[in-house]
Image (tube, rainbow, N blue to C red; front, side, top):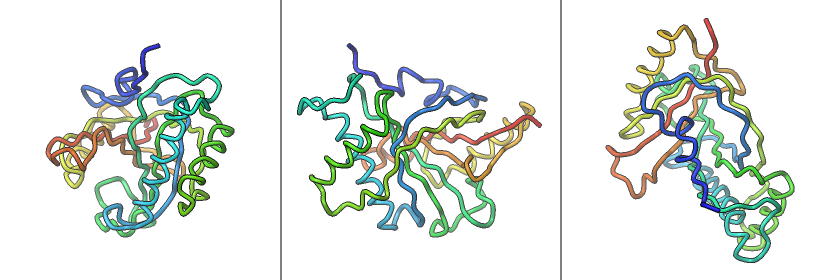
Amino acid sequence: MEKIDYKKAEKHLYMPKAPAIIEVPEMAFFAVDGQGDPNTAPAYAQAMEILYGLSFTVKMSKMGGEEPAGYYEYVVPPLEGLWWADAPAFDGINQTDKSLFHWTSLIRQPGFVNEEVFAWALERLAKKKPGLPLSKARFLRWEEGLCAHLLHVGPYDAEPASISKLHAFITAQGFETDFTETRRHHEIYLNDPRRTAPEKLKTLIRHPVRKT
């Protein structure tokens, strides 16, 4: 069976050629919540270690003959982030003090991953890295629903210009943003900032919407 790469298999969810209104279906994720500047907060670096540790524990389970039922070959999906702040209301434009950010970092999981697989991965990773606070991780099934998104190319700090374009598109299509406690500013990081020049970074920016 060919290895599944969700970015390629579901390009409409990850690599739109133009701004689009989209219905995002339910998916499974590993998630870690936190607060603070992602560039400096130890909690963010720790969240990355947890999420990638769990994700690759599942992916590499086949190497030890412990793959879950229904396992298939796949590429670990990209890192994602939900972002918000207490005040002012966060839309990706008007909040510049990153120390005030709240975030949920996520990595999508393939369809065979469930609560049991998550518990198994926690147990295996705890043995390998006993110092990691794995109690911060959670398994999440989440249906994002009606959204608008576009692909931003360039540095993260240049996102406001793309978000302004997204908001203009949302209004022109007869929608408005629909931020709530469960519907946040959403970013999907399609390449690795450690290995990619800032001007070539690709970030999917997704905002929840509703009809006006």
